[in-house]
Length: 72
Image (tube, rainbow, N blue to C red):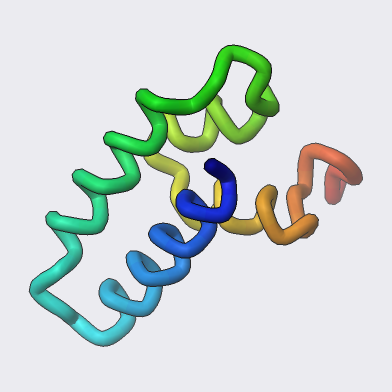
């Protein structure tokens, strides 16, 4: 499941950067995947997706999450 979310978020970020018309479609897909997440999914991933913090969700999936080592 996280592989699908990762790929969709990667596509979404690329679409945003390119000004692609698929942004709405990709956000809808992220929403679908978010609602299908199993109950034991990482709480931070759920949080980022619920708040639509897609860049942070992508960072989390790629191991660059600031929550693991806050930059204070």
